[in-house]
Length: 221
Image 1 (cartoon, rainbow, N blue to C red):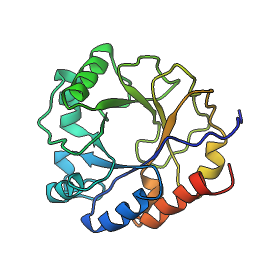
Image 2: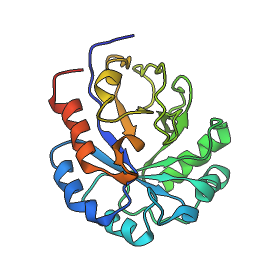
Image 3: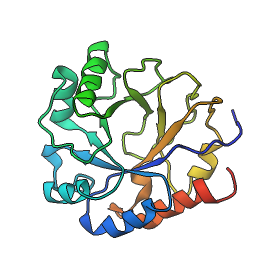
Image 4: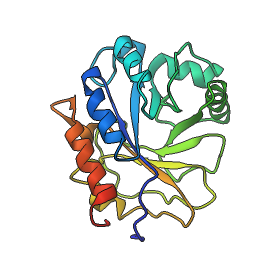
């Protein structure tokens, strides 16, 4: 279904993993509503997509909108116990990537509790219609960083929690894809992309800028 274009509240570019990107991130953030997604997983720390502790601390000290995308053992600890030993100073949102099978009532409760303990809003992933449970925000995600673009997208209706979309978004797809979102009057949403803003598995700020220009400056999709 095609609806009148409604721009996202912001774009999340996930997978920041290098400190040398910071000047460009600051310049781009001064022009557009951007959130920079930082992936957490101790088992993968320092690998592409997962910054080292030193890089993470540089990012956390910068005047940027940041979200912590928590994976692996820490994510499992959060949904099971409501806690994990993480330094989240500087982050304004947490996304708990604990699995693809959805979230139980206790997992939603523990995720919301974890976010509240850190003074931020928590988000979980869904693979169907956006849930009505307002304890957390919801990201529609069937891609999990692989660049798979869904054939259909759930509607973001007024009265739902804050909802986001991800999956195969990037400079070459975002124009056409945003036309397909059904955004209800009064509803807000965000979009998230990871593999679509990498080149040779390196984070590519030029692709981020291209996406922002298409979404916020160009002719309406």
